[in-house]
Image (cartoon, rainbow, N blue to C red; front, side, top):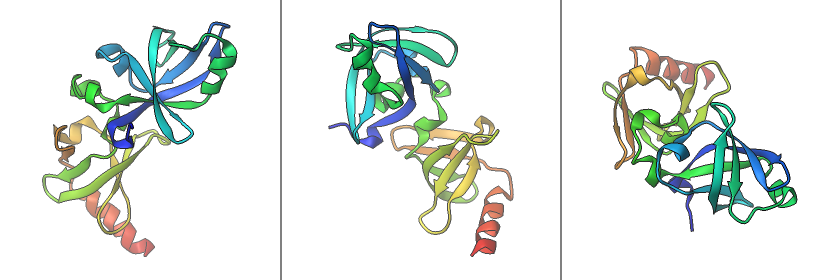
Length: 182
């Protein structure tokens, strides 16, 4: 059985394309094109299910048309409309770290070189202009940390730790806001 900590979200199947079972796929990470893995994982009814890729072709830098094995009609492809698509972390870890999407780091522990352990990255917020890591400390409110390559000092994929050097006051600012809201 595939567990949520073994995968990370890379996109969404939008709708069927044509009559032969192709799907329009919007992705945030093209890792499937960079590493040797021939399947996607879809979240169907709360269960992670692998589907082998028959073929794909890019339409833009964020969309592709995907043909999954065994999906041969638009009716059959329709069941994948608005289904989240995941990728196995074990294959992504073999790719270059610089090519990973921010969502890959969900589940990692974030530690700062000055403050120590900040908490676990539980989500990536892309609703604003600046992408943010949502970090849940062991105690207290969530921290919002900018997802910025300039802040990252190290990534230990084996131990699932991302080490950052945050600007002075950024963590204190979050803590002060939490105290004011209490």
